[in-house]
Amino acid sequence: MALAYIGLGSNLSDNVDGHIVAPQAQLNKALNSLSSHRQINLVTVSSFYQTPPIGPGEQADYINAAAKLETQLTPLQLLDYLQSIEQQQGRVRNIRWGARTLDLDILLYNQLVQDCDRLTLPHPRMRERGFVLAPLTEIEPQLSLPNGENIAALLANCSMQGIVKL
Image (cartoon, rainbow, N blue to C red; front, side):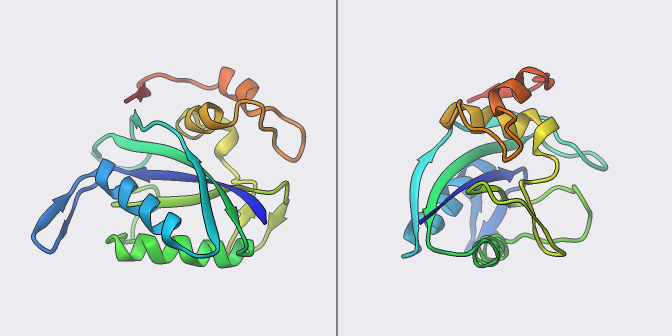
């Protein structure tokens, strides 16, 4: 089994069968989808964090979290599954870093270093994003990137301005 770390985020509600699904509920729904896959074992999930948006235009704050998984899926199979969850939950990809109902990113997959057209591992911008590192450090403070950098040390050098643990 491979060990993977996933970043989760949402800042838009969605109308599902006449019910409004708020950002926190979007993350919970995605976590349920992850835990229901027969080749994924959801090991642990961080607290939720409210974080200011990064991206264009006026956006609502995000709700972010991190999850640790054991999986039999390859990195690309896992990516495909994450994108299918995003699509099922109303994700529309039209503006880079725009508001979204759900964003699921593979942050780390074992200690694999990979750079292909569909997937870069470790996640290329996680090193400077407190909203990624804070929940990741909460669940695995001793975790290091493949180059040996400790995520807690990286977090100490990130701005935590506006990031609130819920």
